[in-house]
Image 1 (cartoon, rainbow, N blue to C red):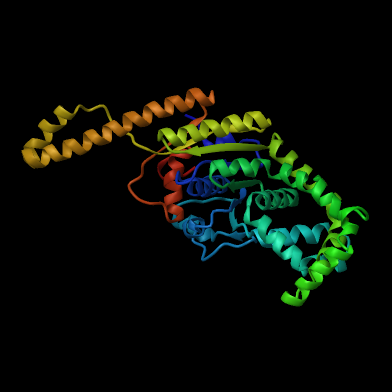
Image 2 (image 1 turned 180 degrees about the vertical axis):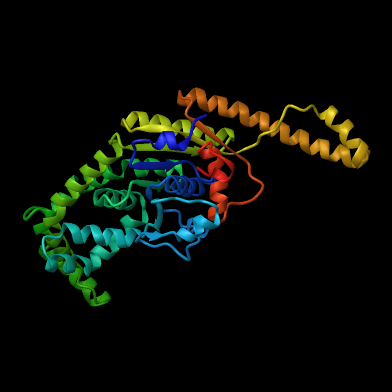
Length: 374
């Protein structure tokens, strides 16, 4: 049986991607907890705004700096991780953008000028609203610091995750695009901005709003021009990380037809971009035995009475049909992905909200003993 431990062998980065509502955040946390239980120092990074990850790991909150999960929680779950550690963080897009600017600024004066500039604050908020590139920046930062054996990244829903995959290229296109280059150039349109008619327009705006937009534009582009090379180099390195042999994408989906189609679509996009695919995890799979409904009715009728037994059997038959549907969809997923590296996690009786629940998931992710204990 396929195991996450086998998919993670030799990897430093596992990227969990999939459509919304399939348990991707829980899966990411479970994978990280399972690998930490096997003696690795692991960090899980989420950009899911629901903060379910913090709750399941026993943390009051998550921020842009990683926090360690209390080792005592492993002991309470009956786990001895040895040298293993579990850390977690939630991406703050704006803070990450500011950190990137600080890294690329040639000096403190330029850094402070950009960070305090009104144009930058608006621009960074707009770009940070699309969290994908900032997630890649934070992923690369953690990877390059080489403090963890494994990084597990929880991504946005899959259609948005396509933006996530292409985020480095989009930044390069923005930096190298004609519109930005025109502003950064010492002549041309940038010089014409200061022309008489445009200058008069900015002067009127300054009187109405109290904002010297022309000066802000001039200061921003003047300061930013010295950082373009650094951004270009960083984006290229992020691209390299995505395609590195030590990175792997794991597609997370449900057993429903639409989420299976999403997973197949995303797998195709990975192949198109030449990015490494590890396997798939199918969550909330309905599983049942092959007992016939009429045989079940006879057995239950003796203890429950005919009316109640009929209702129980009808419910069982509905569940059995769901299980058959799930089985067909998983077989279609196997064919469309072209791999047997598919892990199934059954529909659990309770929601996962703590570390012990994550190890219950790991009993299936890692094909281990009860509770996912290694």
